[in-house]
Image (cartoon, rainbow, N blue to C red):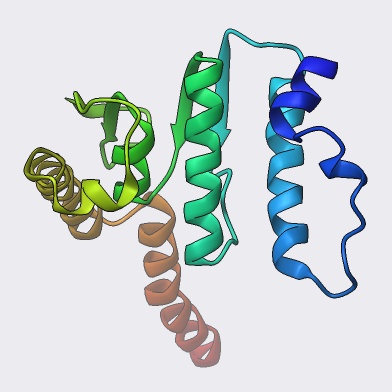
Length: 174
């Protein structure tokens, strides 16, 4: 626990009072506490599903850099689920592009960029931009498949919508 608290919360920082209505620091501390809970048992594999959800752009960037520094100090296998391509490229060694059927990995893209990574430098890095373009192409294809086919729930609701007026009409005719 002490090691985790030292990694996730620099010494005594957790004891510093948070001013009232300071929602941004509170959000950062909440996400850091979530990471501390995830790291507490020193897992070999971590699964993080949108861990920086609900944060504004700047705070999200700070948390990405914070997580990256934690990873550099204490590397481990992490399945990091995100919908943010830039975040994925910044944090990942490998992108798993999911198919329109969510249990299928459509393609794996290696992110062989040197570490530690600089978020600003990645924006203009040609290799990072190639990875981003490829990921966006694949995601677009999968999104179009899902959109064209529709989901089963959407198909069921469309069928109910079309059947409901006929049932009402039939009920009125009797």
